[in-house]
Image 1 (cartoon, rainbow, N blue to C red):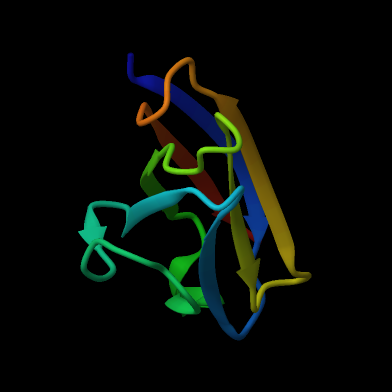
Image 2: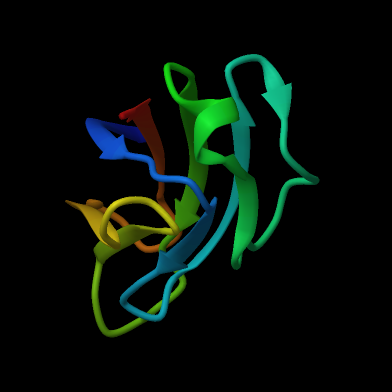
Length: 117
């Protein structure tokens, strides 16, 4: 069974570039894609220090991240994901967690980050 987890938060931008890193936890495997409003910010896969844009040009926009995480760790069915933002007023980490019933199950995480000033 495919689980879905959604989270929403605000991130306060500043003058500099905002960057996003997505960390898949618990020795699980995953892939992500990020969009700023309707524009893809890069190819799907690992996201590390992806520049979202300068604060003034992205304020009022929405950063959306979709991640699919699959349980490949034989020691646990627990999964976690962290969205790390920097370059704004302060660094911020947003986390989400889920447990799956069976080995090999997946979770779709959707993060909505409102870029505010």
